[in-house]
Image (cartoon, rainbow, N blue to C red):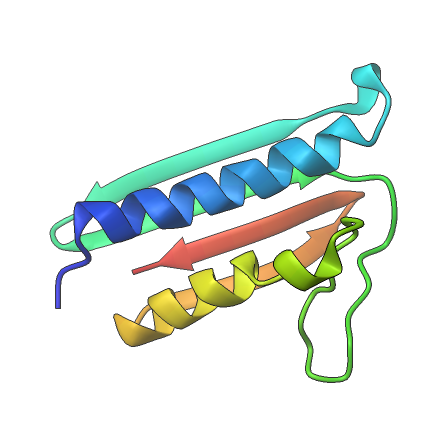
Length: 107
């Protein structure tokens, strides 16, 4: 099943917004955001890598917890992305490496 343009835009905007917000919390000279997108046949590869100021907090269900003050209305973005990727039989990986937070998606 092909992923519609609206869903693709939602995934990309969510990932980039998260990266921008993470970088806003660190010194200017340490801010890095790397964004890649590529397509081949019907597959799309998306990668967002950004610097951040602290180790991510993961709860017992392996979900990242928001660092925003309004926790009731935030913290569901990555989970929404994960559900969308799963719905279209894609693969989403989240990891931390060398002080970078990295999300890769094949869908």
